[in-house]
Amino acid sequence: MLKLLSLSLIQSAFLAFGQVFLKIAMKNAPKFVFTWTCIKDYLTNWNLLFSGICMGLATLLWFYILRHFEFSIAYPLISFSYVFGMIASVLIFKENIPTTRWIGLGLIVSGTFFLLK
Image (tube, rainbow, N blue to C red; front, side):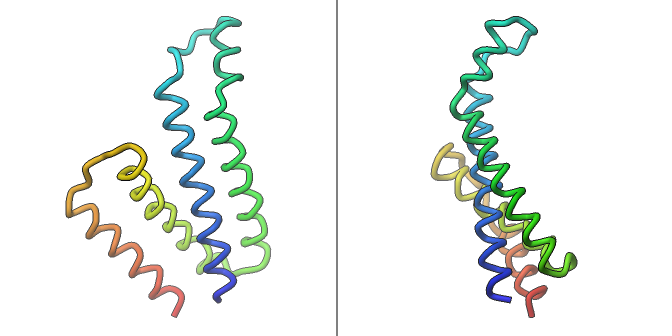
């Protein structure tokens, strides 16, 4: 079970970092129109590339998890990406998180530990 938890934490981190890079890429991206200049801007956006790499790694790791572990236990562990996302929103985007969201996050984490028992 420790192996599944470790793999799920890594996979969730890749998911969350992929979303962080995507948020940064979209924040700095021009409005999309079908012109060569705009398409070139999107194709040369490093944050968008890093987002794709993180999502690709998360997907490959998810393939492995699905192959070797029960779906009913593995799938809920993806919710750890919410934890990483919330931490990133505070540390990277300097967002102010209300107490109710922290409580909700705590309930999600405690629920995943019940699944592992």
